[in-house]
Length: 401
Ligand code: KDG
Ligand code: MG
Image (cartoon, rainbow, N blue to C red; front, side, top):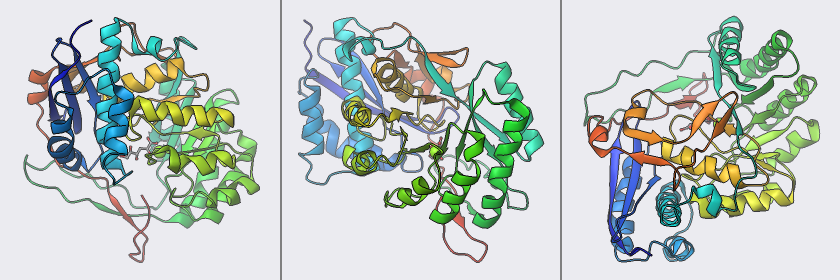
């Protein structure tokens, strides 16, 4: 067995299309593991936490002691939870699982119990300025073999996301401010979803992310009105600080609900699972403490026949996809994987064994999670500060994104 003592760890920040934070851990025995630590719009917070508080405690530890290391950074810190801390813990955890699987000479899914399936059903995003353009985008994705598609259409009359020109490197951009109209959206969303169902028939899985735009009673109404459309799910109908609100939506409809992309711990997820308020849990390794905790969340979900749907927007790096797909391949209650794609430049920096093919994703058989980082290529794409927009109602009231 090679020497598993952690010799060095460093953070690589790059922006091949968008910002990614990657933790690299090296052992004395010559193995390297990497983990994604990206929190969109809070990248430098995670970098500082990793550099000042996490990496110094990593050096000299046994890379094989994954559970103990997880507990050390979670329990040992006194302050628990939150996206910055859990992204740092998640990056350490995924890098250590990568190293352990490489030491074993196995693809990670083998260490997690072996394959429960060969291919993971996935869904991309279709978008359109209006319903016709959205349908064209859905048709394009169907041609690529996708069998599940998330639908987003601009609400007529609602102001659009402004284009935010990239700023020169080193100049902090401010978040753009956009206006949303929950009433117009509540009227429009069922009509838009019905139009796509009518055009593409009943077999295509249709997904929609409400993205916290509406009030609880409006979300309940959308869920009830869209029930005959047999959607795969409605996602994030309301913000997740108070999961009890989901009861109202549950009472109104049997439309499946998916939540959890902003949740960081098993404690955040427990009550909504125990009360059977959701059907899909959307936590993902980078934001919920890596393989170690996401596996526990998935196991808890399985008790209630809730399935996984790991968050896979483009602001999760290909490294997170490696971790998520190996988990998805092994878990008994995998449901679906979001796959919105990355900019082509990301492929110059991250070399991934995972692939999209014919409506699903595969892990590949490379040892570890199968994603490596080309640091020289990363240096060609320096960090570029950027933020999600901040949302207001027409009267200026600050609203949820
Ligand atoms: O950084 C925020 C994005 O990851 C989020 O807006 C994407 O909601 C999202 C999704 O379902 O992919
Ligand atoms: Mg979402």
